[in-house]
Length: 483
Image (cartoon, rainbow, N blue to C red):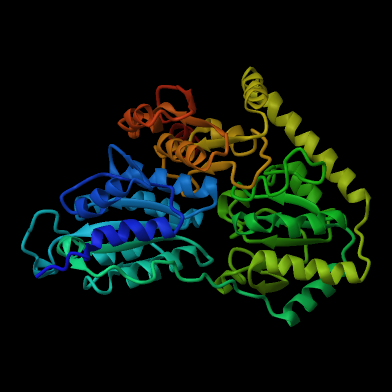
């Protein structure tokens, strides 16, 4: 007989999300997730954004997490709904977004029996493992909370990523005693070895013109980056690393990282330290970009050593800890880079910016006016479109490390739902940020249904829609490659 003090597992899930400091969750309601969503509504502490499709909901949760440096949450049904979110999970995985994807499942008595039960997807867990950092299935009401805790810990542990959890509907409905501890598990931070830092400092102490190449894994390391910048290091960033150093700072190239004058500038430098980056193909001219030597790397993922480029030194560990350890060692030696480095960097920056703006023609006015209107506190969310490839990945200028969101995996149609997620994040955190979205007509129409979500949620969002009445990116590639 049920105890009057017992609550549903769905209610436990709702309260656990609150303990994870989740302000908003995104998804689509279904018969296989109602106990969770009903409990969230009854408690009234986590805003639930009802999307028009699971793909859009996943993008919203992803962008909300990226723009607020927090855990994203998406709640879907099982079967077709879990399939619908697969592309969004791939994007979050590529971007390294900490995201918790909670999906329902059919009743445990029918699981894995291939009965064509409604919403059944045979071997769904394997599919989720392929598009997530990890995937779990809850096997009992008693283990639901511990499974969710493990999932959140996995999502938040660097290298961060999306984690999926299947929860059968009968388990969501089950009554249990209120758990004593709903707090999330601690997230370990990987400390670099002292010997590796000593070796790194020895190599960089010999350099007179060193550069830092900053990726998304260095977003939280801004204070340490400033210490190295004060010693005269030049800065260049990936799309994910933009804003770690404000892009009006004379010591940074921003994301102008592959142009011919920049490549020539690299050859006038005598060391590069790449931090929290995979040196991806689209930011290294398919690994043909000539980078300075020695090429040194810091990454929390040991598997990154030697990938894409052979490195001349590797430190495995948290980027903030590693950069602070490096700064301690170089400061103790009184290290200063060649002061002419930054003058050379600034001249190179100004040259490539002028060339880019000249090539934009009348669109250069659009870029300048958008920058003027948004000021310094904004989200800049971009779909995959010709305009983003041409200028959106480098302009507008960023002043915060989480100001930019774009489809790193190259899937079109994610821009508008991502803009919604970023706008919801701004509203729930009180950041005061205006959200600007950039999309092409092809990508915009792909998730057109989410325009209703944007209106429904009263998002403080402006969409800049570039309409060439075609998939312009694809046409350019097709013309160049196949005539």
